[in-house]
Image (cartoon, rainbow, N blue to C red; front, side, top):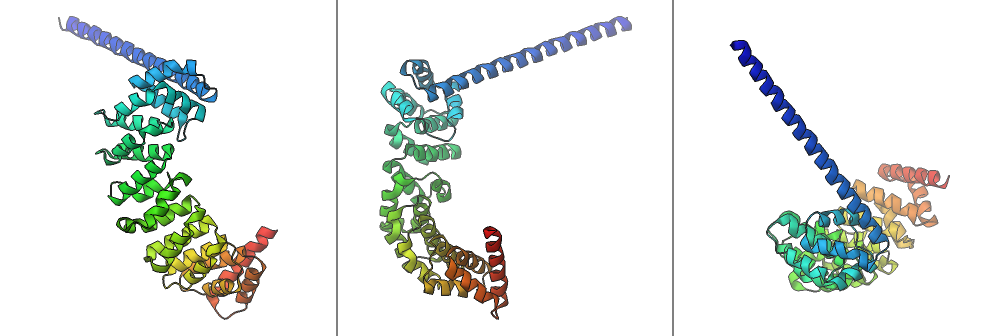
Length: 341
């Protein structure tokens, strides 16, 4: 009796094991099939983006209107860039942008975020204001999707929305800087003069430097004259990135700033601008003996960058009494010899 019962249990166990094995095989086969379908779609999307054909786009546009996996797969193919202009024009004429804008109101955060990203990647400029509303979304990831989308839409309206969101503390400024471009130049320059945006002046300076805005001179000079320590530091960094040698005079003043952070960035800017004015070179030579290591380091690098007059100052420092200046000058000259070799 017991033996029969054990045999029955064994058979049941074997049967269950067989069922589980079949389920696992079936699930794996299903996953493999989904992966094959996804790969085929992505391959087709790449071909469409490379050679846009309005007729061939019809099925994709219909799928984008419905939502689903096609959205995430197209985003994966596009990556972090905007689609070619020909593709954006096909999307504009199709009216699919309206369907994607509608999806910005869906309850699912992932659906809202994906729709925002795709609107930016497909260049649906009319979506700038609807996407901007997501900067106030309760979901952290949706807000950052909106930032990236606005950066791809690249309109002055998008720049204004990002500036307002930073002012209201809705998004971290450093997360916005990487998404700005030359299209944000006028709103950023205007923001410098708006009293309500005064707390953002340092961020504005950083942004103007990152987009290499040649018209930013007056705003950056103003910051160096009356800004906080952080604002003056960011202004010096921006001037170095922009490369406007007309601002050499304000950099000369910044080399005497009471803050070592400002002096360090001013020295770096002097090197980036290759300022070989005698007064600037003298200040950089004085910087070799500064109490702050970063000032000494940047001053030596700047003297290497400004040419013969700077190298002569380094040679002189090697014979001076200041041990800090001697060590940093010798190191800089050695680096210059290695570069020349």
